[in-house]
Length: 161
Image (cartoon, rainbow, N blue to C red; front, side, top):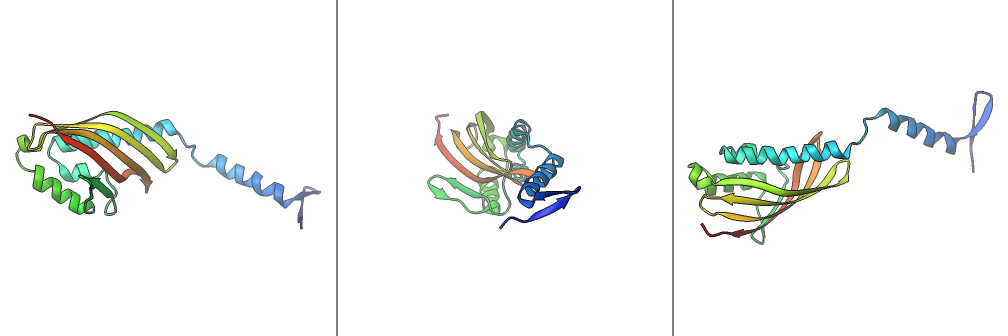
Protein backbone atom coordinates (compact mmCIF):
# COMPACT_ATOMS: atom_id res chain seq x y z
CA UNK A 1 0.00 0.00 0.00
CA UNK A 2 1.45 3.37 -1.03
CA UNK A 3 1.13 6.24 1.39
CA UNK A 4 1.05 9.79 0.17
CA UNK A 5 2.06 12.97 1.91
CA UNK A 6 1.16 16.51 1.01
CA UNK A 7 3.99 18.89 0.14
CA UNK A 8 3.39 22.44 -1.13
CA UNK A 9 -0.16 21.62 -2.02
CA UNK A 10 0.86 18.54 -4.07
CA UNK A 11 0.70 14.90 -3.12
CA UNK A 12 3.98 13.02 -3.28
CA UNK A 13 4.73 9.41 -2.60
CA UNK A 14 6.68 8.77 0.57
CA UNK A 15 8.80 6.26 -1.38
CA UNK A 16 10.08 9.13 -3.52
CA UNK A 17 10.82 11.47 -0.62
CA UNK A 18 12.91 8.99 1.42
CA UNK A 19 15.64 8.57 -1.22
CA UNK A 20 15.71 12.32 -1.83
CA UNK A 21 16.31 12.98 1.86
CA UNK A 22 19.00 10.28 1.94
CA UNK A 23 20.81 11.95 -0.96
CA UNK A 24 20.64 15.32 0.76
CA UNK A 25 22.14 13.89 3.95
CA UNK A 26 24.90 12.11 2.00
CA UNK A 27 25.77 15.36 0.22
CA UNK A 28 26.34 17.02 3.60
CA UNK A 29 28.75 14.31 4.88
CA UNK A 30 32.46 14.41 4.00
CA UNK A 31 33.26 12.81 0.67
CA UNK A 32 35.09 9.51 0.57
CA UNK A 33 38.44 10.11 -1.07
CA UNK A 34 40.16 6.78 -1.87
CA UNK A 35 43.46 8.46 -2.82
CA UNK A 36 43.62 10.30 0.52
CA UNK A 37 42.76 7.11 2.42
CA UNK A 38 45.48 5.19 0.57
CA UNK A 39 47.99 7.93 1.39
CA UNK A 40 47.02 7.68 5.08
CA UNK A 41 47.58 3.90 5.01
CA UNK A 42 50.97 4.34 3.34
CA UNK A 43 51.86 6.85 6.08
CA UNK A 44 51.05 4.25 8.76
CA UNK A 45 53.54 1.87 7.10
CA UNK A 46 56.18 4.61 6.77
CA UNK A 47 55.75 5.53 10.46
CA UNK A 48 56.10 1.87 11.45
CA UNK A 49 59.35 1.55 9.49
CA UNK A 50 60.81 4.66 11.14
CA UNK A 51 59.76 3.48 14.62
CA UNK A 52 61.35 0.04 14.14
CA UNK A 53 64.60 1.52 12.87
CA UNK A 54 64.95 3.78 15.91
CA UNK A 55 64.20 0.85 18.26
CA UNK A 56 60.74 2.07 19.27
CA UNK A 57 58.78 -1.20 19.22
CA UNK A 58 55.80 0.33 20.99
CA UNK A 59 55.70 3.00 18.27
CA UNK A 60 55.94 0.25 15.64
CA UNK A 61 52.99 -1.54 17.23
CA UNK A 62 50.84 1.62 17.02
CA UNK A 63 50.14 0.53 13.44
CA UNK A 64 48.23 -2.53 14.69
CA UNK A 65 44.74 -2.88 16.15
CA UNK A 66 45.10 -3.07 19.92
CA UNK A 67 44.38 -5.53 21.50
CA UNK A 68 42.65 -7.62 18.84
CA UNK A 69 45.12 -7.79 15.95
CA UNK A 70 45.32 -11.21 14.31
CA UNK A 71 48.97 -11.91 13.53
CA UNK A 72 50.03 -14.94 11.47
CA UNK A 73 53.71 -15.78 11.10
CA UNK A 74 55.82 -18.93 10.72
CA UNK A 75 52.70 -20.96 10.02
CA UNK A 76 51.11 -20.10 13.35
CA UNK A 77 48.81 -17.60 14.96
CA UNK A 78 50.85 -15.33 17.19
CA UNK A 79 49.52 -13.95 20.42
CA UNK A 80 47.60 -10.67 20.56
CA UNK A 81 48.99 -7.12 20.41
CA UNK A 82 50.84 -7.32 23.73
CA UNK A 83 52.25 -10.76 22.93
CA UNK A 84 53.54 -9.49 19.60
CA UNK A 85 55.16 -6.47 21.27
CA UNK A 86 56.76 -8.76 23.87
CA UNK A 87 58.14 -10.96 21.07
CA UNK A 88 59.72 -7.98 19.29
CA UNK A 89 61.30 -6.63 22.49
CA UNK A 90 62.57 -10.09 23.50
CA UNK A 91 63.94 -11.13 20.07
CA UNK A 92 65.04 -7.79 18.59
CA UNK A 93 65.41 -5.33 21.48
CA UNK A 94 68.51 -3.73 22.89
CA UNK A 95 71.48 -3.20 20.61
CA UNK A 96 70.62 -1.72 17.16
CA UNK A 97 72.90 -4.35 15.57
CA UNK A 98 70.58 -7.01 17.00
CA UNK A 99 67.43 -5.28 15.71
CA UNK A 100 68.53 -4.85 12.11
CA UNK A 101 67.20 -2.29 9.67
CA UNK A 102 63.64 -2.68 8.34
CA UNK A 103 62.46 -1.50 4.95
CA UNK A 104 58.98 -1.85 3.39
CA UNK A 105 58.71 -1.60 -0.41
CA UNK A 106 56.70 -2.65 -3.47
CA UNK A 107 53.54 -1.72 -1.57
CA UNK A 108 50.15 -2.16 -3.21
CA UNK A 109 46.99 -0.89 -1.53
CA UNK A 110 43.47 -1.81 -2.60
CA UNK A 111 40.62 0.10 -1.00
CA UNK A 112 37.79 -2.33 -0.20
CA UNK A 113 35.40 0.19 1.37
CA UNK A 114 35.62 3.52 3.20
CA UNK A 115 36.77 1.66 6.33
CA UNK A 116 38.66 -1.35 4.95
CA UNK A 117 41.70 -1.84 2.73
CA UNK A 118 44.09 -4.58 1.74
CA UNK A 119 47.83 -4.01 1.57
CA UNK A 120 50.33 -6.40 0.02
CA UNK A 121 53.98 -5.46 0.15
CA UNK A 122 57.49 -6.69 0.48
CA UNK A 123 59.84 -6.12 3.38
CA UNK A 124 63.51 -6.61 4.12
CA UNK A 125 65.14 -6.84 7.52
CA UNK A 126 68.87 -6.33 6.99
CA UNK A 127 71.44 -7.20 9.61
CA UNK A 128 70.26 -8.08 13.06
CA UNK A 129 70.04 -11.53 14.58
CA UNK A 130 67.93 -12.98 11.75
CA UNK A 131 68.19 -11.14 8.42
CA UNK A 132 65.10 -11.90 6.36
CA UNK A 133 62.85 -10.77 3.60
CA UNK A 134 59.32 -11.60 2.70
CA UNK A 135 55.81 -10.48 1.93
CA UNK A 136 53.18 -8.96 4.22
CA UNK A 137 49.48 -9.26 3.51
CA UNK A 138 47.56 -6.85 5.72
CA UNK A 139 43.91 -6.04 6.26
CA UNK A 140 43.56 -2.44 7.39
CA UNK A 141 40.47 -1.17 9.17
CA UNK A 142 39.61 2.42 9.95
CA UNK A 143 38.83 2.49 13.67
CA UNK A 144 37.90 5.75 15.40
CA UNK A 145 39.14 7.70 12.38
CA UNK A 146 42.54 5.96 12.33
CA UNK A 147 43.85 3.27 9.98
CA UNK A 148 45.23 0.20 11.80
CA UNK A 149 46.23 -3.31 10.78
CA UNK A 150 43.55 -5.75 11.94
CA UNK A 151 45.06 -8.82 10.25
CA UNK A 152 48.74 -9.27 9.45
CA UNK A 153 50.10 -12.30 7.58
CA UNK A 154 53.84 -12.61 7.08
CA UNK A 155 55.52 -14.94 4.64
CA UNK A 156 59.26 -14.68 5.32
CA UNK A 157 62.52 -16.37 4.63
CA UNK A 158 65.86 -15.92 6.27
CA UNK A 159 68.60 -14.65 4.02
CA UNK A 160 72.34 -15.26 4.09
CA UNK A 161 74.37 -12.64 5.89
